Length: 89
Image (tube, rainbow, N blue to C red):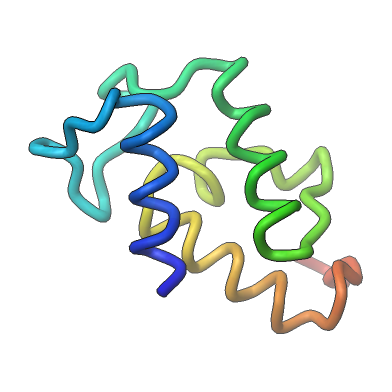
């Protein structure tokens, strides 16, 4: 699933293999898990792994601050049909 794959990436890339405290709704920013450089790494990973385009205005905590938020965001993006911008969102 998207959640399990994103969890594996976060644990491998930012937590050095230790996911004891990482739950689906754990805030990456509040817990200091990912910094601004890490966000860029995460975005690059999502774009390559899922074939989506993350727009500048989508780089917000609502989309990228937890495993659950990322999974929901990726599912929305994939449902739009190839990175097409959603009108009025």
